Image 1 (cartoon, rainbow, N blue to C red):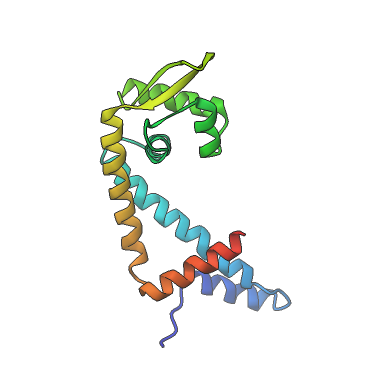
Image 2 (cartoon, rainbow, N blue to C red; image 1 turned 180 degrees about the vertical axis):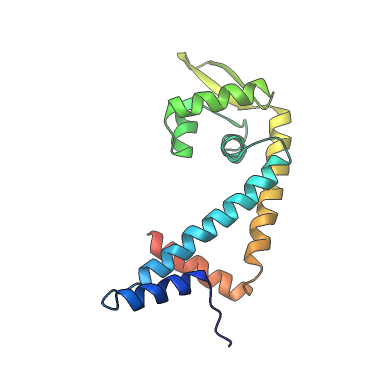
Amino acid sequence: MASVTDDIDRILAQWAHERPDLDTEAMGVFGRIFRLSKLAGDATERAYATFGIARADFDVIATLRRSGPPFQLSPGALAASMMLSTGGTTARLDRLEKAGLVARSPDPDDRRGILVRLTPKGHSLADEAVTAGLAEQQRLLSRLSPEKATQLTGLLRELLS
């Protein structure tokens, strides 16, 4: 198999020259992960933009969509699922409600609570946007064989555990 080099290899070679005492393997791994994350994030952001939404908007409607029928959550549950503060979620909900993608209504089980529900328009948009974003991610991953993609998934899962 031919050896492939990239910009990270150049950076590591510079460090090896300047600081041969350093073990830069972790720098190589995480440098590539960071660059890949940016590349994939930018590609999916462009895919979502064709639907008039940003990644932050997609996160909300996708969270509601994957929650299953009736596609509604409390703002607290929504924020927790997205790992955001409830304050950070409010601005997103305001924007999405104005666009007709979500609706807020009183929680019938809690007089003080509200529920955020995906509208039919939001449901449709979530399905279209997730398909487009996933196509971009699959395009990026297509450089690997299915076996290597599976191996990478396992390695990343192990690293994250």
